[in-house]
Length: 96
Image (cartoon, rainbow, N blue to C red; front, top):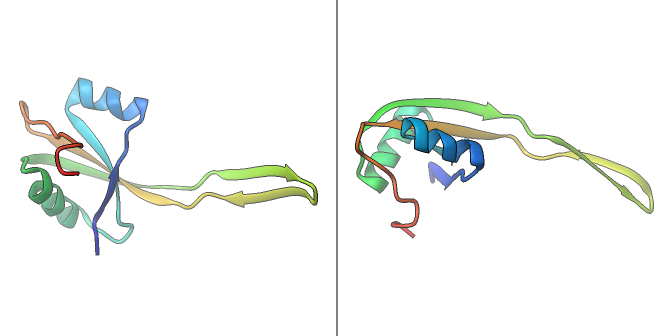
């Protein structure tokens, strides 16, 4: 099971990184905090102070087609916000 899916690179996540040294990842839905911590420490070689996880519900999407209005929902996912020790950072592009 691959625990880390991908980093979340949005404006809100960038502000968290700049102001409070917190990094955001999209993770496996069934992973717990201990598994997430171990995976990030192994991949990036950093020390983690805290991890906050949340389930992000999918948005309702709709579009007009020839057959009428089609509605659906984007899938839900689990997000982890990781707080690192002062002075440490994660380079997302180093492990590609």
